[in-house]
Structure formats: C-alpha cells, structure tokens
View: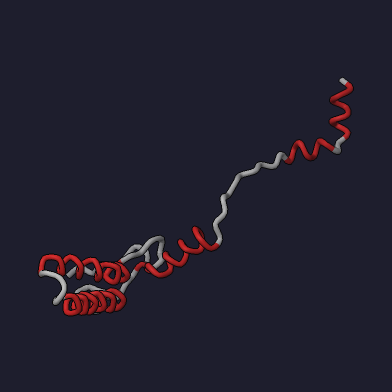
Length: 117
C-alpha cells in the first residue's frame, strides 16, 4: 500500500468527488447548468452544430473558474489583481539609482582635498 504525501503540506487539496475539490465540483456543475440553459434557450434559433459550440464557449469561463490557479490565486483573485494593476492603478515603474557616495562627497572636506591636489 502506498500513501502519497505532498512535499509541501500547504499544497494539499482534499478531493470530494472523482478527485475534484469542492470548488472544482461546484464550478463544473455551474458550467453544466450554463451549457444546458444555453442549449434550451437557443435551440429554436440555432442548428445543432452551432449550438454545441455556443454551449462550449458559454460554459468555458465557469469551468475555468474551478481549475485556474496562478501564483496561488484563484481566478477571481487573479482577475481582481489584474484589473487593479492594469486599469485602476496603472503606473510605469522607473528605476532611478541613488549614488550615495556622490551625495556624501558633496558636503565633505575630502572632495575639497582632492581638488587641491
């Protein structure tokens, strides 16, 4: 019998159903519900081939929400951080170096002594 243990304990995720976590299961069910709703809503308007693609495209963001993770952030936290950094508080970071040695020499007697030589 083999027991698998994560190297990092904080990365442990409890699986609830078919190896999915509760979050993944809820988002998968939400994606299925959206796909079914789109199918029955657009069935009179579109043909079977087109409606299948529309269902997939409509359900994809909801399915992605359960499985997406970037630097430990879930999809909604990632989108919030992206909106904050790109739209709400955009700024270009410019590196400006400070020459502490030159600032120290401005008011120093060593500088005057160097000029005399």
